[in-house]
Image (tube, rainbow, N blue to C red; front, side):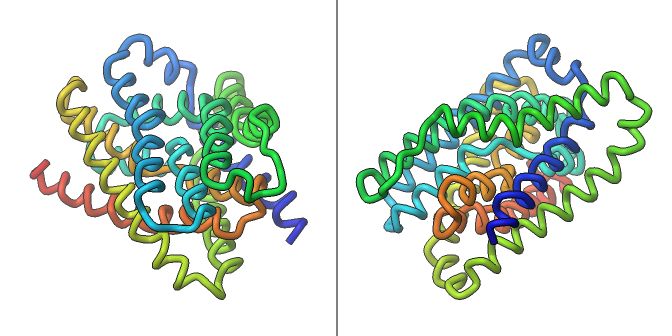
Length: 284
């Protein structure tokens, strides 16, 4: 288990983030300045409102403190490549989705440590015998998130032909790695998976549906059009489950803290596909 946790899991996440970087260009970042309103609505929804809604649910919903911590970890995670793919499938603004994924993934170097350390102190507090530092967490997130994304971005910039050839295969491999990480997290807790899903499944479902609805309503009021609200809702509903699982395992040794990320990762695909089906019928 030590080899898997210390080596395989971080490498899997690093590759997934590298694959994300291969699909990015510098224009994905500069686009933010050209379309600040749409980006601001999406970023506010994901970086501020999503953790806030999760924190409210974690305090109101009867659950173990470790599950509450895990709920905050998945809420702190940025969106992933899946949100870009499903945004395209649902005829949303793919460029906005990619920009949100890119910028918020890099911002997560700061936001994840702050949210996770605060949540650890709030829900676990003196029950635990160890301290979790913001700086230490930020360094870990930077190494497994920001560095691979930046490497992929630089490869795309200076070896575009190679990046364009490698990106489709890297995305497929990323999907396989995500499934393996998710299955691994479930297998690790297989003895208690049913009871854990009963505890964490409903609250992660409520978080997922509530945030997609809130993001869609905010985007309807403030974003520039229907394709933008599709992208924003998708970005707020589809989180980077691999990153959340990795953070929970590396910082807290897995256990209950991993369960919300695992249940959310399963649930978010079902709700997103239902949302896509509604959109493709032209009723949204």
